[in-house]
Image (cartoon, rainbow, N blue to C red; front, side, top):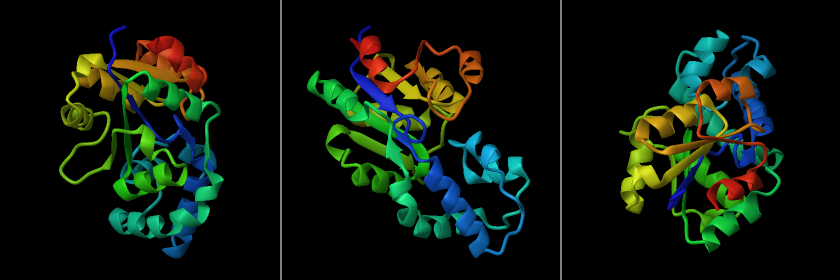
Amino acid sequence: MDLGHICFDLDGTIVNSFPTIYKCTLRTLEHLNISDPLEEKGLYDMIGYHFLDIFEKLKINVADVESFINIYKTYYFEYIDDSVLYPGTLVTLKSLKDNGLKISLLTTKAQDQADMLIDHFELRPFFDAVYGRKNGLAIKPDAEPLLAICNELDVNPSSTLMVGDSDLDIRCGKNAGAKTCAVSYGYRKLAVLREENPDYIIHNIPDLLQVVF
């Protein structure tokens, strides 16, 4: 396969951040005196979606979602140590980098949160571009943010592999004309991923090297 660029999702793909997300969400709801119950499994199944969609799906009444997000971000660093890299992440990124591939990150997290996690785990040297949620850019599954990354890195979408744990990642890759690789160890059930017909499915991150090389 002729690849020059690997684009990774963040949560559920290179970082298991659910404990951080869950604790921050609970803390922020408490801060805002919102008593609607938050089911852990319900939130788990919605990781990767915008909070607006999450609250609508889980029937949690948050009047001002942007205000919620701003408060949520103030708590995020308090719980960041509850997030961990998936096994094999560092060796996989190093191998891709050593072989000359361009590497990017695309997440629906706010840009400052994405930067915080990447810097916390000292991953910055591996990435040529880190895209969190940006004003003026659509979010996954729209192709726009992935195409923006390809344009910035001067790579063709057809030589790009989008790697992620959710239906949103696979749809984003397909919409952009990229190859797609689903990871089964993240936050979506394998059956959900198979429905999206990704080009590849891997069960741990080092397996990606067999796909690429």
